[in-house]
Length: 110
Image 1 (cartoon, helix red, strand yellow):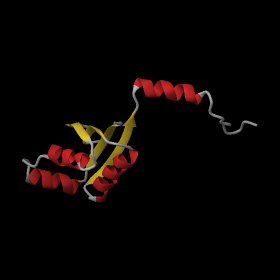
Image 2: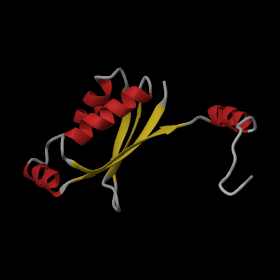
Image 3: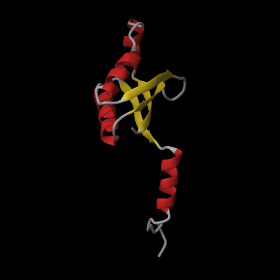
């Protein structure tokens, strides 16, 4: 199953709700969201900086990953909500080999 890494950041309103109920387990909510699409959440981590945290999980496909990202975005509680597919070393190797066959003309080339 493909592996995905997500970055997220809460809105001020979402933080206010978390402060009002610090016992609310957001890991459980994230696990349920990913599981509802046939996936597995490997973890949810909090951080400092331009985002509030990261999640790592497996989902059946890109459509499922997009669906969970869209559902979370639709909640209105996020100011940042990104999901990135992670490639294995083997997949990167395949992509590098396939890159040799790509016909691409850069801008300004004739």
